[in-house]
Image 1 (tube, rainbow, N blue to C red):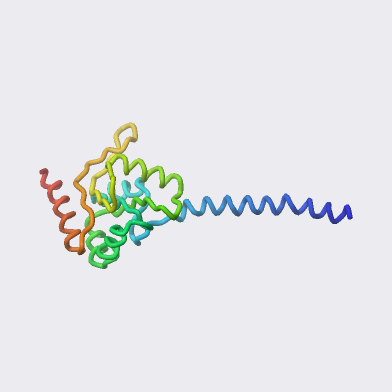
Image 2 (cartoon, helix red, strand yellow):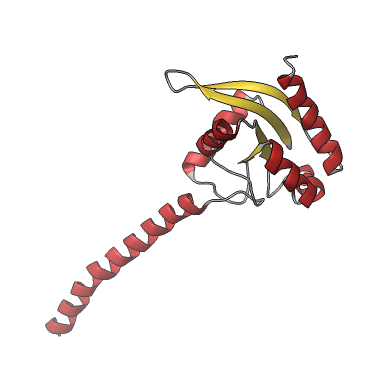
Length: 174
């Protein structure tokens, strides 16, 4: 009897360790694999900043409630998933999704980033789309150059035309 109890107690720490490793790996994996709802969109402001600096393109940030906001879902279906939007975006902007879901969990660092940006841009409703340039000062603080904001549009043409006007206005110095 002592032998089987000894075997059992020697297995518990190994199984417990395997469980801890599995759960820890799952948490780290979730943070590393979190992706935007729409293909081609980034979720990390730092990545968007780097690409914006490399390409000279402004950032188009979609403040969305992907799993609960009806107008957000309509905007995605009528604009963001369309091939003509994807082509336009590739040529003109860096896409950043800032999600505020109710049913799914975001990694803590993404949740904190999104909350800070929601406050900085004073977003109170969804969908809200901001177009902006981004820089960092000597202390590492973000410097936002807001071009303008928009919301729901019925068509890709309506949406991209509004954003094109924002970009043209900024580029002409208005």
